[in-house]
Length: 290
Length: 316
Image 1 (spheres, each protein chain N blue to C red):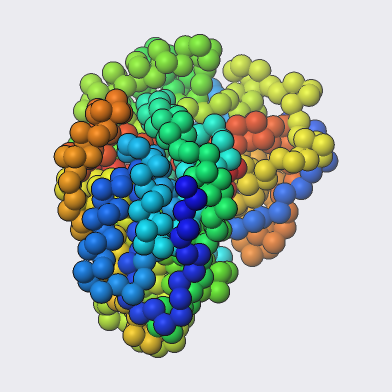
Image 2: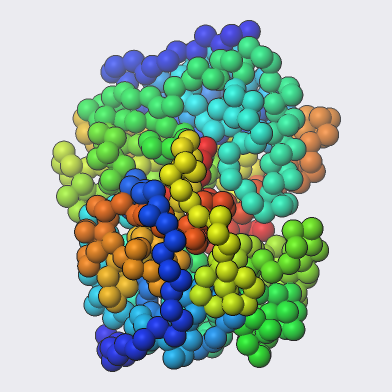
């Protein structure tokens, strides 16, 4: 199979559903698509990392194809496509590395050559207009696919630089797996505030949205996964983070059948991350169970 | 705002090693990390492996005042700096430190490199408040150089193991999860054993699944005498940069500001070759020169000073 997904967001889109790391969670992807359709999304986009963590990586591709969803290349997709040794998350903790390698090997071995080749052709970023806003959709950051942009480690003036350098009003990313958003005025880039909060309105408004991940919960003790629903009216942007309930117990069963680590299954069932914790900043780490 | 300690300077206690290479140059790709030599080279300890030989008597670099730091923070906004790091010496010897941290945390994420021997309950409580009120993360990097008092204190001084470990317990108790940093003084084949021991020791003060960072030795300053200096071939030459991802090197994404100028990186504080200007704007537009042997360690291991392999340290 060679997925025939679109490679662009058509002009005129006002309501966009943006999905982050899928991590082979085909059940959550299907549920999120159905949810976005029910909320009247004009278009959908996926910001990469199709494989990892979950079972049966090839199940994700037909779902994306059936809905013509454009996909941006994630670091995992890049690694799998190029046959690299690991996922490029840069772990040094031996425990994190053990699980990351196990997951990577599983995903690599079960991703068809056609799908691997297809992922290699994915764009690093997509640019499009949402309302009157210039949007850049990427996986990590506009400058690097595997750059982590956590809420607690990303200054507003740094985001302002990214929008300036990339010539965009809004940047969409994922990679960390935890959703957050910030808006600011380009003329005062040290003061950020949640989207929709009061600030000086006008042409200089900028925003960053980490759309979250569909592949696993957000380390918040909930079983749902999250995506972002963006709506633009002219240059006014609103962002809603949507929790998606799906049959997580069925996914856990599939994972156990595939003999994936019980630590991964625990995350799906409890909503708390158990592995790959090294990358978490202190603030986000302290908010989780581990 | 309290005043900084009076500015005095004396000769460095350890003369820098001679410059060994003209060295290739590295341009700044982006000013992602701004380091502050906030306590100069003044430290309450005299660690035998310190690469800039900090001690109570080493006044070759002095404390930065809150106003000095604030000026650089203001400049950093224009450069789009991503992370702030505070080092010394011992940062908590700077009497302005809590105010400085508050100023920095208003703008972005902060990491403090500390020996954790000056963190009484009152200070830990202040740090907790700062961390809670900022949207950005406050990271404490605590140096502990061994899994027993005997192993650590031989390097860092009598009683430092217990004092640092107690402070780690206090930090963890208020929800601050320090990154425990240790310089590797053991053979590679003992890594697993040492890490296991670290986890066990830290669990004893309530730190389960601790954040651990192992650093390679930097064979300059006091460490050159404790173990060995670099040998003649441990240099970075132009050929070694052919095809090498420059973003692995800290100087491609960072600068160090001090009370007496701006340097390419925090490791090379004793080396005039690494002083790139009087101001941040000046130093950010000048390339770093990989002239010193310590650059070989960065070339080999990547930007070990960063908390994580980030933009500046990730070859992808």
